[in-house]
Image 1 (cartoon, helix red, strand yellow):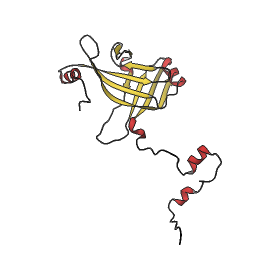
Image 2 (image 1 turned 180 degrees about the horizontal axis):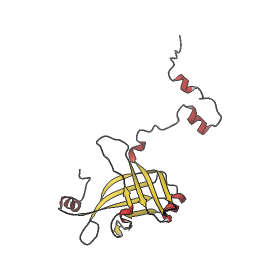
Image 3 (image 1 turned 45 degrees about the vertical axis):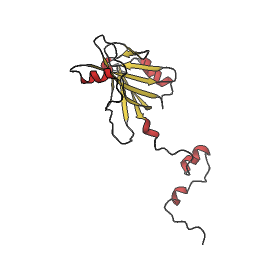
Image 4 (image 1 turned 120 degrees about the vertical axis):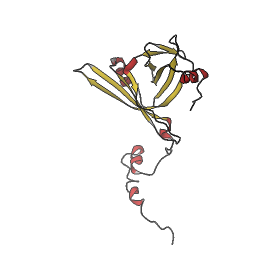
Length: 187
């Protein structure tokens, strides 16, 4: 699959050797975090991606021809408490995460148009701190944009949803028991 890759990227993919990098974007309310696993700071698309090297990683990204929900975990180990504070201070659920794969040329510049590997929304962060070892890890799980593809819109006739809108109302309390019953209307 070419993912509409530019000619330069296709050339790099076919080369005997190349220097692949990943560009990470985490969009928050107050700012966007730009990170890369490159050995130095990278500027692409007018954004500076902070080099965190092997301290940033992500789980395997799977693809298929069918529409299915995929998830990816982006982790940042040995992190500065700035990132922990940023997650705790922002509304992170449903924020965009993008992972791109690019290549560096011999001058350590990004070859145009890195390939978008994953785009999804954050559904939960995990912060693991070990005060004895002095280490911390921040992970965010992101779900692909297909997560809401089959979601039914509107109100549903069940007690749980009725309690959200009208706490204490008993109007739908026994609706679940009617699901398997045969109801004959009329004669």
